[in-house]
Length: 317
Image 1 (cartoon, helix red, strand yellow):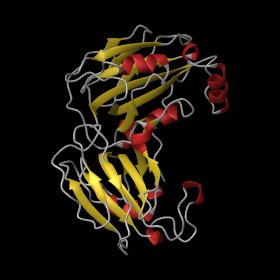
Image 2 (tube, rainbow, N blue to C red; image 1 turned 180 degrees about the horizontal axis):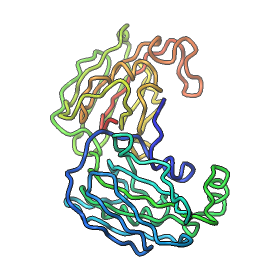
Image 3 (cartoon, one colour; image 1 turned 90 degrees about the horizontal axis):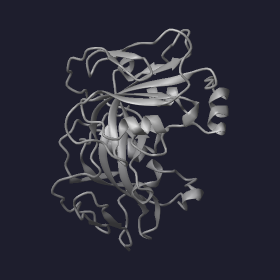
């Protein structure tokens, strides 16, 4: 089962975040820092922070603060950050924590987006690798529908706020980088424009598809090999062999997709296991390792269709 991320545990109806990776940022010492909310944050970057809350009722006003500066390129909208997130329910009583990535031993992917609650978005924009930010998300950052939905899930924003401490590890690449080679699959054409641009996949052909799963490396990454139980952050295009019909594309949606390998078709899970992070691969998937005899009518995929994917593996968790 896909693991529950710290951010998802905090605001499952409000935030979109993927699962994490075991990569860690370099620790640096930090004295206790006090946020505008009165919360004190202590501990080194790369280790679970310790929070001290002011006495009395929680503030119901949102705020954000840079706790540790970090170094490197500041984050901007559209970036997908690898980060360790620790969450607290600030109710003025137990101030309990529903989750921390440090407790699970791996980070998660967080997309910097104005669709996030304003305080969290403001905290993440400009955050640097090795840095630490704090966001207090209160009801003034949420719509009435969001407050109602959160209450149904057990979080009452009329009497409490949520506190998120985010330790930024790095920003993931937007596309696989490096010298591309021809995958050498008869009937398939792949163009690699380079940079952060999407590849172009053409599968219009009269050639017969491979009967078995094939995985061809187009760009070889230098990151760790993907494991079968991980979630991968991917940019991909999926087409049907022979017709060139495109049935799915994260590139068209404008953002990479985190996909748990134990929740996808067998061709994906088998094909991506062992692939180094940072790679671009071409995968052909026969029907029995795709959607089977039933196909996927919603995607226009028949039970006899061979699927072709070009996949950029941008991260693994």
